[in-house]
Length: 324
Image 1: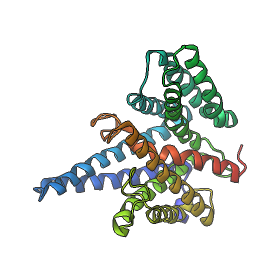
Image 2 (image 1 turned 90 degrees about the horizontal axis):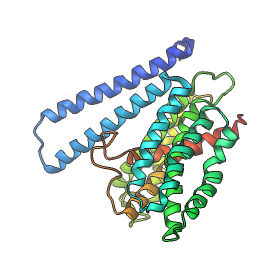
Image 3 (image 1 turned 30 degrees about the horizontal axis):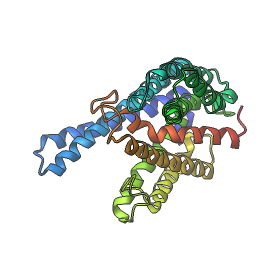
C-alpha cells in the first residue's frame, strides 16, 4: 500500500489500466480455450455465446474508459456525448413517432443533448443538474404542441423525455464524475469512475446469482423473473463490500465507501429493472439489433445500471462532501 501511494497520480492510474487490461486478457485467453472444446450441449453453447458477448461488451467499456481518461476532460466529455447520442438513437428507434415529432427530435439530439455535455465539461454543475429535468422537460412539449398534432401527445412526449433522462442525463454524469474536485485528490477522477463501474457491475452480477441460489418468488414476475427483494439486498451488500475494499483508491473512509457503494449498487439494480420494464412495454427482448455498436445486444442493455447509478452517486457526493 505504501509503495502504491508513493507513485505519482499518472503512474497510479496507469497501473490501474495495466491491471484491468491484464485481467481482461486472461479472461479472453480462457474464453478461447473454452471455445476450442466441443460444446457438450445446447445450453453450454448458449452459455459460451452469452459469455463472449458479455466479454466483448466489457472490453468495449474498458477501452472507452481508458480513452476517456487519456483524452482528458474535453475528450471524455465528447466521447461520452457520442455514446449518449448512439444510445438515444437506439431508444428512439422503438418509439412511436409521427411526422410532427421531427422538430422535437431534432431539438433533443442536436440541442439538448450537446448542451447537457457542454454544461458537464464546463463544470457548471448547478445548471447541469436541472437543465434536462426542468428546462428540457418544459421545452419539448412546447415544441411538439406547436406542431399542431394532438394524437398520442402525452405518450410521445413522455417517451422522448424518458429517453433523454436515461441516455443524456444519466450518462452525462460519467464525465462529470471525472471533473469533481476533492481536496487532496486532484487528477484521480478515473479512480472514482472505476469505483462506480466495479460496484455497479458486481451488484448486478451478485443479484443475478443470488436470484438463482435463493430461488425466491420474483417480486415483479411480469417484468423480471430474476428480481426479488432478497436478491436485491444481496446485490447491494456485495457492491457495498467491494466498495469498502476499494476505499483506498477514493477520497472516502471505509464506512463512507461502504455507504456510497451500497447506494450506487442499489440504484444500478433498479435501473436494470426499469429498463426491463421499458423493453416489455416496447415488446422487444433486446434494445437495438443483435450486432450493435457494443458488439453485444445493444447499448441500452449495457449502460442501464451505469445510467441510473451515476447520477445518484454524483449528487450524493456533491451533497455529502459539499463540493462546488
